[in-house]
Amino acid sequence: MDCIFCKIIRGEIPVYKVYEDDDSVAFLDANPVNPGHTLVLPKKHFANFEEAPEDALLATMKTVKKVGRSLKDNLGILGYNVYENNDPIAGQVVHHLHFHVIPRQVGDGLKLWHQGKYNHGEGQAILNKIKIN
Ligand code: 5GP
Ligand code: ZN
Image (tube, rainbow, N blue to C red; front, side):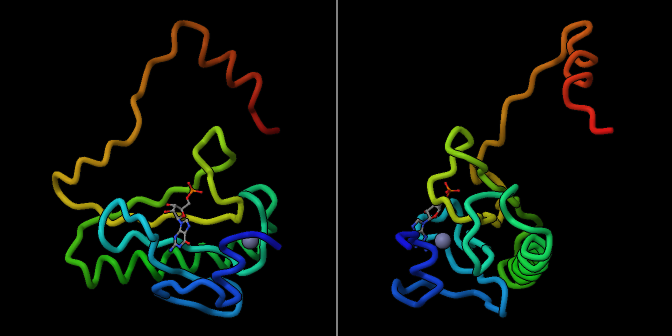
């Protein structure tokens, strides 16, 4: 399997490992947005969020929570973002599901997204398409 994160999990590429258990691993992103930017992923290869079964997601999110706790306890930060880029259009480059846990600092310049407004009727039209019954 030619997946860079699978290679990391097999120990073929060195990383700064923050945490690991039977089902998930956390290591520093090689190109941090802020110091402590950590990637959390299931050890089994799933290309993206919807391909991962619930037990793998649960194990991975438990690790996200542990990492967030450690960042807050040890980096003197007040908060962090959890991101998951799902599919190339959303910025996913490595196709092994992973969550970014990014510590936030005052004035770090990290911009989230711009937000718009729904015109009259647009909210209802979207809802009609995506509502889950
Ligand atoms: P994506 O855009 O797929 O959500 O993010 C992939 C992330 O993996 C990027 O932030 C990138 O810096 C990180 N990354 C890619 N290759 C390596 C690597 O070999 N080692 C580490 N530690 N991080 C990597
Ligand atoms: Zn993989």
